[in-house]
Image (cartoon, rainbow, N blue to C red; front, side, top):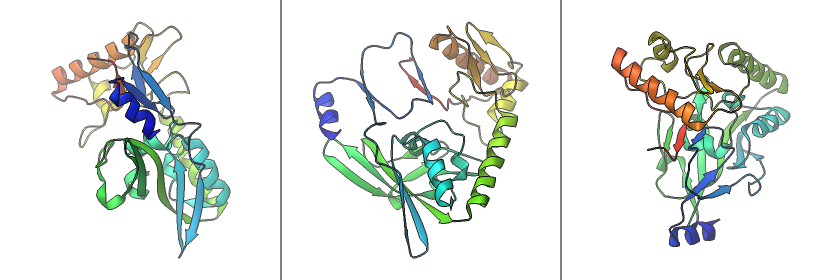
Length: 258
């Protein structure tokens, strides 16, 4: 991977590193670039225990659903907040993914980055975190991450996961073609509440629609274009800012726009 990155940079070839791509909006007319998938190159998820502490290590391309199954099977608690998030560990690390139940910065111990010069291991004390953002001190690709967890009875871990999944089902749209929450919550408020207050719930543009169930989700139909979703995104930003004086910041990653 480090050699690939070195060659691409040397040739000035644009590239995009993909986990599961669940939080991306890619432009319809995106110029050609190299997409690097870490799924098959990913380090297998494993756990080790020493001195009463449990470390969970997995590759960046590991699906969070797979990581959650391992935690359940081994009776590990502390990472349940990741259940139901349709992404990879690398993506979760990069965006400091989380919910009201917890976030990556609460459990991250260290990260291995792959740079053009090789592997670099970065401990938590050298990483800065903010809301939905992890600020890594070197440029490169997240290769794997180590999180801390604790031992717990499997039935308790299962109950915690099921409770979170039930909660998500109640407040989020049914599984559909979507990138999840579109905007970050502004300090002291919720993006969904602001979008609804601005009168945009249910708004349709082409094949994209602001969800009737949760206004911070844009759902799509077959045939929808990225430009439809992006158009709604910009409409929301402009309308909420005009009516309420708040500029919403996208949570999804935009590739090839502006």
